[in-house]
Each structure stands twice: as C-alpha cells, then as structure tokens.
Amino acid sequence: MSYVVHIWEHPQPTSLAAAEALHQHLADRASPPYAKWQQLRDEIEARMVSQGTPKEWIEFPIDPGHRERSYGLEFDGPENYQDVVVQSATGLGFSVYDDQAARLYLPFGYVLTFDGLSRFDRGDQGVAPPRFGPADREAVMAQCEAAWRPRFEALGFSFHRGEPARSDIPLVAERVVPVGKQSITISFSTFEERLSFEVIAAIVPEVPTAVLEACGGARRMQVRGREYRGIAAFMVDHQRGMEWMSMGGSLRNAEYVDRLIPGLFEYLDNEILPTLQACTTAAEVLHAATRPDQGPAELLPSRLPLALAWLQGDSALEPFYAQYEQVLSHWDKDWAREARDVLRALPRGLG
Image (cartoon, rainbow, N blue to C red; front, side, top):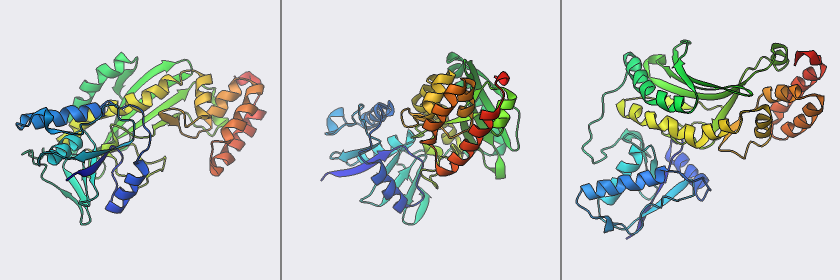
C-alpha cells in the first residue's frame, strides 16, 4: 500500500495544527532549484545500499530537479525505507510530516505529536552527542571560523571577530562595494546559559552624516531571505510571516553545530549572496528596494534608500519615493514621508 510523507525545510512549527497549516501553505508552492534534493537522494540511496538493499528498491526516487517548496514522497517499497527517509532528511535539516500518523519529525532527533515535543529513536544506533554549554562557545566559534573563513575570503570578504556586545560575540564578514559596504554578522550568545546564534546580513551605504541624521540615524539596510534554507532547521516558527523574527536559533549539541557549518552557506548561497551581488551600486539598491518580490532575498523597509535617492539629485527623490511608498506598509509610509520631507530641505552641498 502506498504511503506519502511531506518533506520541507522551514522554521519549525510548534504544534501539529501549525504543521498542517504550514503543509497547506507550502504545498505546490514554486521554488528555485535546490541542490539539497540531490543530497537527500544520495543520502537515502547510500543508507539503503549499506543496509543490503539494491538501488532497484525504489519506484519513486527523489527528483533532484524538484521545483516546489515541499516534497510529497510516496512510499511503496521495503519496510525500512520510511526509517531511512526520516534519518536522511532530518540529518540534512529537513522536517518530515507524516500527517496520517500525526507526527512531524524535526531535525536532530526530535518529533512533534499531539503530546508535544520529544526525542525519538532514529533507528541508526546514534548516541546523542554531548550538549554544548556556555563554556564551549570558544570551541564552537573556532570550529565555525575555520570552516567559514576560506569561503568568505574567496568571495572577497574580510573575516574577523567583532567586539563583544552584551552576551554576544560576533564573527563578521565585510567587503567594500561601490555603494559602501556589505556585511554578514554571525553572533554567538550564551544568554541564560544557552548557546545560540543569530545571522544578520546588511548593506551599509556611504552617506554623509547630515543625510543619515535626516533619515533618523539609520546606518544599514538589512537583507533577509525568504525561505531561510540552511538555517531554517534551527528556527522555531512562533511568528510565521513576521519579518522581524530572529534569523538563528539554539545550538543544543554537537549535531546542531555540525549542521550549522554547511547550513550557513546554504542560506547565504541560495538567498543572501545573490541579493548582495545584485546590490553593489546605489542604482541597484534603489531598484531592489522598489521590487521586493523579485529576488531570493529582500531589503527590509528602511529610510536609507530615500537617502540614496536624494544623493542622486532632486529629480530622483520624488519618483523613487512614489515607487517606494507602494511597497511600504501604512506605518512605514509615515516615517518614509517624514524622511522625504526632511531630505527635501537639506542643502545640496552635503552630497
């Protein structure tokens, strides 16, 4: 008898009702090509073969060219196939929703049922790695830094540790582009004895101080992905659709850290870096700000695009404001209008 589970990579729902709503939200939703479908197929096949089952066991193998946000995978084969799919998918940061059994398998050995969240036996004889605690932050950061530094430097970023702030110690990647600077900050925190991380990507334009003050003192435009692929496994979806949800999560044990190392660049490669590459000049930033649905990531609402438009000249500010207003919420329009009015009154010699 055939049996279907649904696989996705998304911030984790906190109840089965939320899982079903998420399933309905993601079903048939178009998505760009994603290399992890091939990784999932390779992992499943390797596990099945290692258990003595030839590749011919599967009637419906994973399609690496799948172009939808979730994958409805039909089972019609050996009894161990479902266990292997769960082991493989959750190890890569996917969630596996079995709506018939009312179970959502989450990354790193957790399962959500009507009774709540609990650990589960993945059937791979794996022993839960030791929990990382605050004293291990230095070791975790060193492990991440060693893996990420070559990748960032190959992309033209400098990479260094930033100054500690509150309970956070950041790793900072920066590069200079014509509009100013682009930065990606990964902060590691030990707040309340929990080791966690947060990722913030931003564009920091080079703008005169008086113009920044006219825009309320803002200095950076945050760039956020849409699907959070790569770091979605670490995120708990309390506020699906809320753009200010923290981009990060807890690092409960070594398995989380191991997944974070490739997971960060899955997020960067698929969402953040293409958008940063398309926003190296003032004109490109203004284009992206007024077309937030066109790229894999978006610029969050900010007064700074108005400052860049003002720097282009009197003839650029009004047309840009008219376009920008169309993509802002009612609340955003109020402060955007105030910033435009202050910028109008600035003397031109500042630019």
